[in-house]
Length: 74
Image 1 (cartoon, helix red, strand yellow):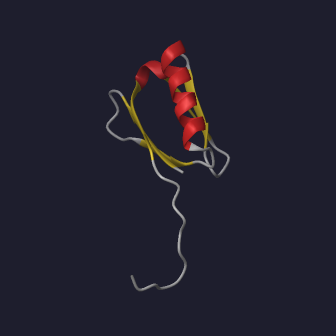
Image 2 (tube, one colour; image 1 turned 135 degrees about the horizontal axis):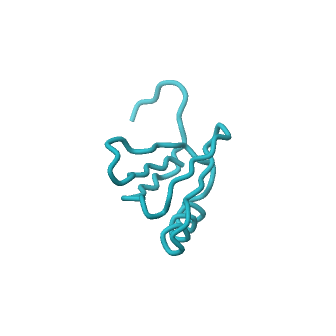
């Protein structure tokens, strides 16, 4: 699942691939925003991203995409 996070006063967005579901990510974002805490997400490589809840500008949760191997004709 691709997740894009916009941080206030930062020109670049944080992009990560996570094995968490969209519902788990949305719940973590809501919790960080509601409590004024921190958003903690792990990516597929085991790294952890921690962002203060008050600094979150937006969160874009992508659709789980199945990658195809080889050539296909559509």
